[in-house]
Image 1 (cartoon, rainbow, N blue to C red):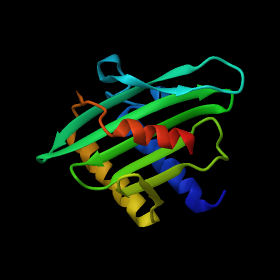
Image 2: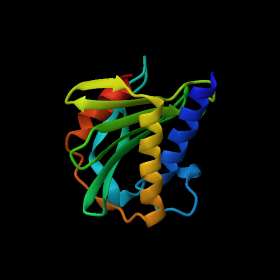
Image 3: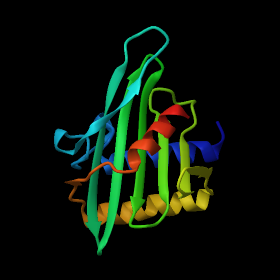
Length: 163
C-alpha cells in the first residue's frame, strides 16, 4: 500500500467518525447510526448460499451557514470484514461517496464523486483533502443531526455496495 492510499484510508476513517457511522470509531460525538436516523430502506445482500441479509441505512442532515449537508450510510458486516459505505452532498454540489473495509488494513478505500447523475469518477487527492477539511470545519462548529429522507442516495448506496 502506497503512502497516498494510507492517507486516503485515514481520511475516510476520520470522516466516518465525524458522521458517527463507525460505532467503535466515534469519540465524543453524536452520530447518525441511531434508530432515529434509520431509513425504511435497507441494502439487501445475499452471499453464495446464505439467506438474504437486510443491512440498515441511516440518513440525516445538518444545517451550516444556510447550507444543508445530507449524509447516508450503511454498515455491512460479513466474513470478509466490516464494510462502511457513505454518500454525502452539500446543497446542490457534487455527491461524494466512500467505502472502506475497517477489518482489512491492506484493502484500499474507495473515494469517488458523482458530478452527473449515474456517473461516478475518481477524484484528485486535493479534492479529497478539501472535502475532509470542509467536514472538519463543520465538526468544529458543532453538528446537530436531524432525520432526512433517503431520496436518491438509496440507489447510490446500492451502486457503492456492488463496487
